[in-house]
Length: 299
Image 1 (cartoon, helix red, strand yellow):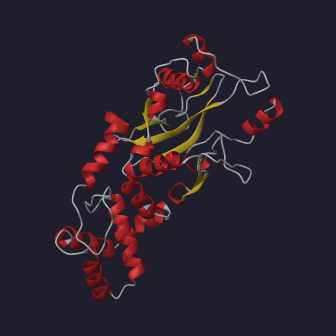
Image 2: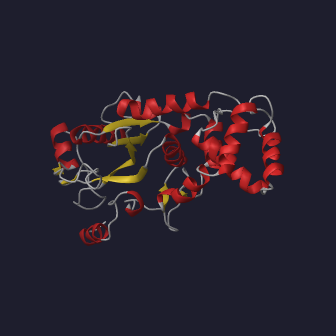
Image 3: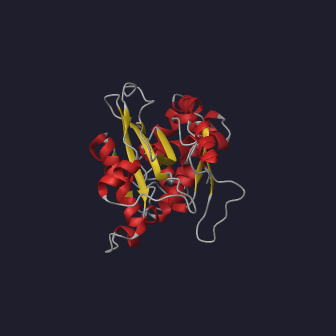
């Protein structure tokens, strides 16, 4: 890292913006390679951009946050070393919010070494794994910082462990700027839930989703599955709709997957998805428990 490169990255907008305008501070490029983790891209069609993840845990967290109802997920979000606008500064209701202290100030107050880029005296730009945005029923935006850390770090007895020090810095930073900070281990999410979210996440724009939700086909799918889906297999019931409406199976299946993703039909996504068997109640409870653990009472 050089001062010129750092300045160019900031001038190009990396680590800044909200919704479709956000550019992750850390991006995954062809030059990135790791023997210990999985890095890649995750389509965020409803967000009109591409997510960059640097581990399977980050990918799972992004998908789960969207399933739980986050209206924005900003991965690799920078906690700038210097004073800077609040992370919610671009959102309605926060436009007049002033600058917040940088991570250097937080580190100084905590007595923790902030750190620099290797071989330089340039303060490194620390990142929060995901800064998520939620819209409360009252119409107010709320932010939640999600950090993926295994128990080997969170439960480490040595407080001077560098990874634990950095986690403590981020906790103090979030407290200072008044946003919720939650440490999670996405590897502990139910395996089948992760598999199902990967399968069901809509690769559709918000307009396309809304069009399907408002359609007669979607209403028919919900009515039949909610009425008989716990006694008969989903395949049988979807076939009835296909015959009745002369709609291609692929289109009916899109509506079915969307109903499960939105939990408009209560099905437990932490269990294997077997459309040739009846649905299993309990999905809404699973989602609410996870949302409570991550978001708490903010919603």
